[in-house]
Image 1: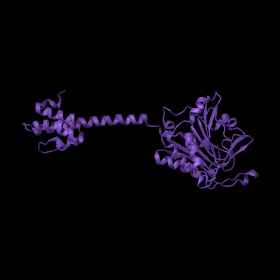
Image 2: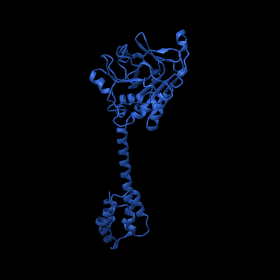
Image 3: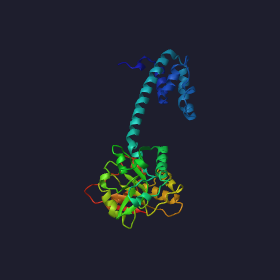
Length: 340
């Protein structure tokens, strides 16, 4: 197949070659092609003064001083513009594919939340469970801050809709973090979270291997050392997706100012090189109005080193397909390592 350059004279070929060397855009070349009269490309292309003066100026001045056929050259420039446009399109496609391959998966940038502010329990002693007027603030503020950056909210369970184990709201959905805010207690050495009309005692059957990697319990007594939290959570999370448990030991402050910990937690997550564990610890301590809240971060793994490594996991690593942690093995013991 004949090349469109075959119809050009040597000077015209030199003109086109010099123009290509300057790596113009397709728009710039087409602009030259549409000019009615012969023009110096240096008057239209955005070049640094050094390039303009010492590299191309004398060459184009020499070529323009000769008998160059502008009508013929215009056609060549139009063909050149089309070739450059095709390369630009191909390069953009390759760049897009590279961005998509290296970008974090969207589902691992998402958060699911649950909270309960009012309760309607049937058991006599639980009928007097006090309302938590600010329970919504922690998870909602956390989600809103992540959405500001790049995240999404995939599931919300609130008040009278918070009846079944809340983690089941994620079945068929994917979220990197599940954030729950409600009353929490220890009953018969087991952790329980208050739902709208009952208590939820987490177990491995409530979770799945495709569930959240980070479980945030914005409740009281999420990780008490007396009784030791290891006795409960090692069984409750065996074989599940959860690799990092963020909670508090003993009571947690639930007033309007302290619940800003949700926003502070998300904001800390987005800081480069900050681990998810430290993001939680700093958030709770910096917002507690009484100083009584005692945050704890617990890494889980099928070995002690694997559990300890979770305490260094960052949000960007959690969002990356290549660095996000695998689920726990259902046949191996669960090791827990904490940071206070």
